Amino acid sequence: MFIVIDGIDASGKSTQVELLSWELTRLWKTVKVLDFPRYDQESSYFVRKYLNGDYGKNVSAEMSSLFFALDRFDANYDFRDDMEKYDYIIANRYVSSSMIHHGCKIDDITQRGIFLKRLQNLEYKICGIPQPDKILFLSMSFENNQKLLQKRAYESGTTELDLHERDTKYMRKAWQTAHDISAQQWWILIDCEENGELLDRESITEKILRCITHP
Ligand SMILES: Nc1ncnc2c1ncn2[C@@H]1O[C@H](COP(=O)(O)OP(=O)(O)O)[C@@H](O)[C@H]1O
Ligand SMILES: [Mg+2]
Image 1 (cartoon, protein in one colour):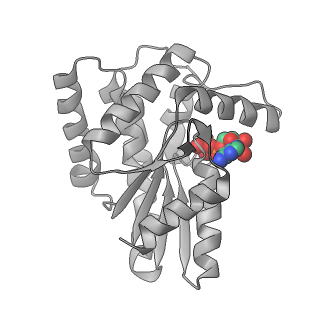
Image 2 (cartoon, protein in one colour; image 1 turned 180 degrees about the vertical axis):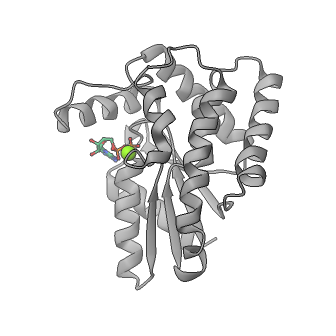
């Protein structure tokens, strides 16, 4: 089964991918984890330059989404054979991340809809990458999301944020778009809060596990 964990920046994707793969391994399942974009690969050349701001702030959604699609196209030659070999392939971000982060550049709902269809055509049909069985979207309020973003920056000891992260206006827009899009797609929403309070990591993993093992 091919599962994607998605959500906006600092929504706990890496945390959940790690916990989930650990829990599935404990259940004697074979697990392979994928991470996108693959910053350490040559195929992410344009992604890295774009996120570093080398192309400026006005790169169109069509153009910027192409950078990320090509990185996945390249990766797919490494992982498509693994689809049969593992019980679970878990991707930390995938096409859904591009839908969120590039889709949010387009305000007009109709135009955005057209873009999202084209993007999925580009990735799944033209690039021919595997389609996930389940896309799990980690959902939380913008305020809780901002807290996690600051926490991660503090923990990693970095004050360096990328083109998107350092722009709060963009982050709010990405948050709103992500929630709008996730409601329109067939993604499974994982509510990471209870009464406005963020759930602990393990409780979120339990929710995800239930979604995966009891369809
Ligand atoms: N449920 C949670 N409660 C508290 N802190 C969390 C929770 N999930 C993640 N974190 C912390 O929030 C920050 C962002 O999480 P991370 O997994 O790196 O997010 P992402 O991969 O989506 O950017 C990290 O410092 C992480 O330890
Ligand atoms: Mg991460």
